[in-house]
Image 1 (cartoon, rainbow, N blue to C red):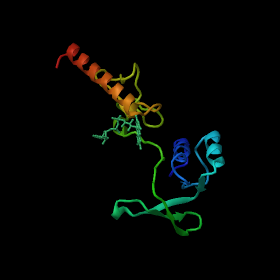
Image 2: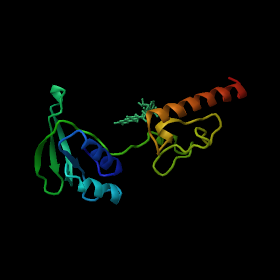
Image 3: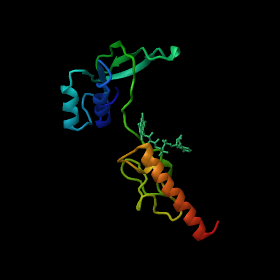
Image 4: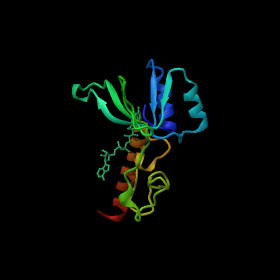
Length: 162
Ligand SMILES: Cc1cc2nc3c(=O)[nH]c(=O)nc-3n(C[C@H](O)[C@H](O)[C@H](O)COP(=O)(O)OP(=O)(O)OC[C@H]3O[C@@H](n4cnc5c(N)ncnc54)[C@H](O)[C@@H]3O)c2cc1C
C-alpha cells in the first residue's frame, strides 16, 4: 500500500482481511493521516511501515503479474527490493478541474463547488461526479449526480431554447 493519508491507512487495514502481510510505503516520515487511523494501522500486527521510501520500479510488469518493487530509501539513498503480490495506491485524488479555475468556483483542493447538488455558479453549467464530490466519491453517487445533471441540462435547454 502506497500513501500516508487516511485513505492509505483505511485501505491497508482493509487489505489485512485478505493478505498475510501488508507493507505501507510512504515517501515521507510524517503522515497526513489522522492520529486515530495511523494508530490503528501501527497497532495492526499484519501491517509493516516503510517511511522515507519511494518506488523506483515495479517488478514483473512484463509478465503481467506484480512480483515486487524496487525501493529507494530517500534518506540513505539505499535501494532494495521487496517481494509483493499486489500493489495498491492510496495517494489521494486531484480533481481534474484546474481548467475551470477563474470560471467556476473551486474549493481549496480543486473540487468544483456546486449548490443544490449539481448547479455551478454559471447558469446552464452543471457539475457531477467525483469532480464535485469530495465526500463520497463512489460510482453510485457519481452516477446519481450524473443523472441529476443530465435532467437539469434538459430542463435548462427546454427553458432557454436549444
Ligand atoms: C481504485 C478505486 C476503487 C474504487 N472502488 C469503488 C467501488 O468499489 N465502489 C464504488 O462505488 N466506487 C469505487 N471507486 C470510485 C469510482 O470509481 C468513482 O466514484 C467514479 O468512477 C466517479 O465517476 P466520475 O464519472 O465522476 O469520474 P471518473 O470515473 O473519474 O471519470 C472521469 C472521466 O473524465 C475523463 N476526463 C478527465 N479530464 C478530462 C478532460 N480534460 N477532457 C476530457 N475528459 C476528461 C477521464 O478520462 C474519465 O474518463 C473506486 C475508485 C478507485 C480509484
